[in-house]
Length: 291
Image (cartoon, rainbow, N blue to C red; front, side, top):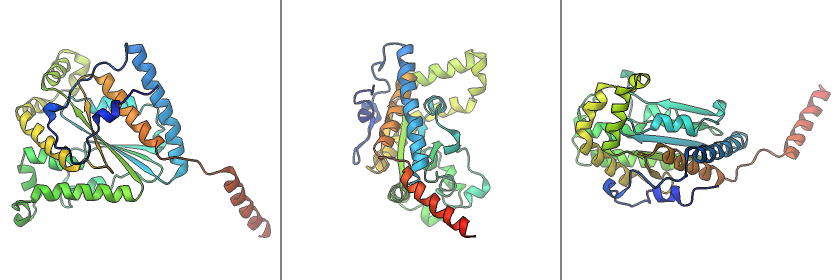
């Protein structure tokens, strides 16, 4: 059973001027209890596994999933639970941290472009090139460390050009068979505080906590403005953003998993027909006999 209208409620239509205060961080529960949630998620995961097999056999498309969000918004958990049934042979997860010196020596899209999924595969970016218009916008020193020419960094349209580069890349990928879904996990500041406290109070979660996470909370409003501009400028028909209410992890995972299933179902994926394969094998057989 699909969740009625849930992904559509979260999709940012191209041209929308995003104001995050107008987007909820929590929906009403989509299932009645944890058991029903798990059943629904299992259905989505099973269907995704079937579709991934077809994607791999079809070899015409690739799927790129991008996850962005504030610290503790649930990116890691969403990827773990939603993609739990996917064959790792056809799926790669990349988590992008602070760029290395070699990566800084290239344009800001270089390191992620090298990690794009080949046809037949699913690629998952846990953070992505969008960090270059998010954290880099909140902390301008990051741009200074990229050693770009001053006439570029001081130009009035510097950020506009970065958004344009991203949109151009995503449209290029779409024209070449890469389906792109982008998920912004929209977390409230109070819920982030509760999750940080949980990471401190529960010993098994201590490893998740970093003092830097708390320091970044001081820039909450700056990040919200950076996300608003980013979502406004880069959500397109070819590569839409979904603003996922992330205060409820179960709801978030169900909405994300359904979005992925619907995207794969829209591709009319098919495995090579047995007739085509049989003809190919017979032709090879004849060549071998003639040797």
